[in-house]
Length: 190
Image 1 (cartoon, rainbow, N blue to C red):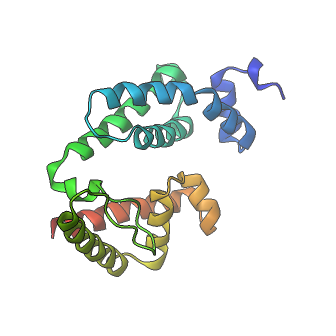
Image 2 (image 1 turned 135 degrees about the vertical axis):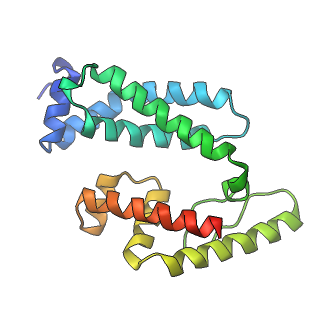
Image 3 (image 1 turned 120 degrees about the vertical axis):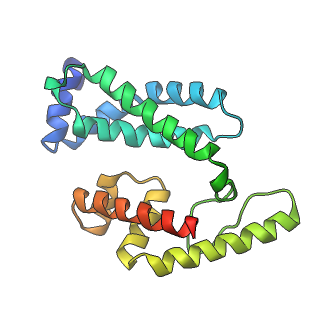
């Protein structure tokens, strides 16, 4: 099939019907748009990782494909652009939240506990202990499945890929991530 000749709306309809190649085509086609938005936002924020914004933008774009309705009053480009910007601005707000600053210097949670990135050895020890404590609390609070989903999510997998990896439905992954967010918020606030 020649995807170049199809409109975004036609490609979305194919993707919603399970046509994986049309989904990949849409993601590849809009990768530069996502990168452009991420670079623009990262210029206004000191220290935020552009790659994090790009990852959030890709996830938001994927969600936009899944939730777009041609009857919504906006074309897909406008809808996707709004979804991408909102996701990245949400990331920026989380980044700027001073309450979570110690957690922002950490690499993703994994079994090896790759520790905080810092130039001060004393801070590294304190942050290392905080990360280990946070890791233990997460492991205690989350079910085995939730913890596995969290690790995959932090590694940058989208909901569909997580669902395929764990053999569950995409909606189950979405529900689990919502539960995980609530549990982690409780951990952070305790």
